[in-house]
Length: 245
Image (cartoon, rainbow, N blue to C red; front, side):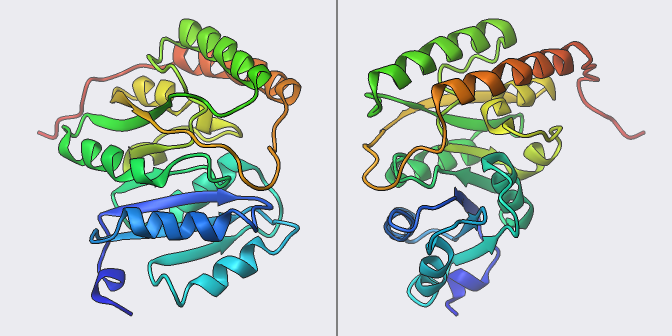
């Protein structure tokens, strides 16, 4: 094992995957190229895939020593996979990317370094996808959902559906966990008194596999999630810091 792989990393890249056997190996190699020269680890969390995703990733470990492969015993969803990866991460800064390859790993170091250079109060630098490479129906649904969420939660985010985010591990683990939390991380970070920022990132066509979400399925989950986060915001009390005498 190389010194870079053995030392405590500066960055942990967490990628949730489900039935992405075609996309995952290419994505892992792109992440390795993007973070070449950095002290990093990448953690792929296989959410009980039905294909050979996990086997293909395990085969890559000899090629990419920074690669770690975790596997859920039961399919539990994207948010649970992200949380499993964050819990296993060794670095203070975590970067997440979607496993379908539509997020461009080349953007990830920029977001991570912007967060590292910021004050401790800055807990998240999120990506905002430009030139979305999705169907018109999906883009319109996303635009509507983002607009409603931003208006009601005042989370300042134009695109919480972007899987590319850099955040402080400690701050993330302070957040209340629930399914689909990955779409509400900015709002929950603000609720805890942290600051958030956003930068434009590239978005790519899906080359393999199929989307795991439908507009109807996303809408059904979003309504209850949005009401729940609004309730959490209404019950928040911020002490503006803690001092030890």
